[in-house]
Image (tube, rainbow, N blue to C red; front, side):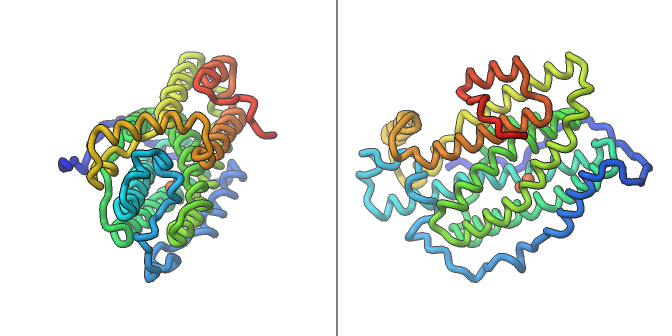
Length: 330
Ligand SMILES: [Fe+2]
Ligand SMILES: [Fe+2]
């Protein structure tokens, strides 16, 4: 596999708001900040790094591997299939890891950009949270899964290039805390419930406890801002939501993982196409269906809460196959 660059430089212009009003102005954000301080955890101390990960058993549930149940994968000898499980899991976890790193960078920008001090205090804690998530996932991959960290997938890169390069804080917050984190949370929850490796399930449980605060930030900070947007800004934000949802929902295919276990291009293509068929109906897609349903309902619910569910966004979400009636009671 060709060596991929491991550094990107993204130019951005941002406005630092050095505000000096220290009285509590947003008690709900202060409460979130208090929760963040109370619930800190330590990757070195709170994760049992002495636990053995049984790579011969596999990491993710086999059913989550694209092409599971197809002739092409059934033909693999058991040892190759087990290697594929490890590579496939490492590929997906690598994308989550790059997302955590990107989230840390975006939150560091948000500390400067958000207008109020209560919001600044909170996003300062999120910088540490995301550093911890990048720390725990990278340690898991490097120390427990054979050390392979796969390059960042095109979709993940596009969404973070946009989030990190954009000059408005509310666009970053919609991109990160409202959309990308909803996607990540649905994935972590599925892994927490289904992964074969107990250490990974525990890591996911720990990460999820932090992520609920991060989504909470978007729901608390965005409604006033979005209500005050002029129509041009609102349209730009809606366009961004559409683009980001397309990137998040179109899925990622871990081609490099199949290549690494020695599968040929024709077989990989067969898996790639089978994946789309499988997603449409059969039993193998059970986890995926749960994941989609949860992800869709959370996105719709949060968009409603922040004031982004309107005729235009409802129309394009329906076109993407998102059931916009899924919003739970806000
Ligand atoms: Fe995170
Ligand atoms: Fe997060």
